[in-house]
Image (cartoon, rainbow, N blue to C red):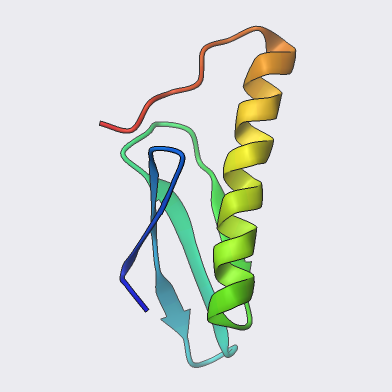
Length: 70
């Protein structure tokens, strides 16, 4: 697995906790805190994509421009 996830121009970190047997991460290069997790690589990737989609939906609903990763 790569150490960086990519989706719709957003980048996400990949970390693993042996203590709780869980992958986790957060969207990088933006001020908003968007985190995700999963027990498997596939679950992590899907939760990352859903988190980005949720963020974009929230921005649209509130009428604000989403931050763009730089």
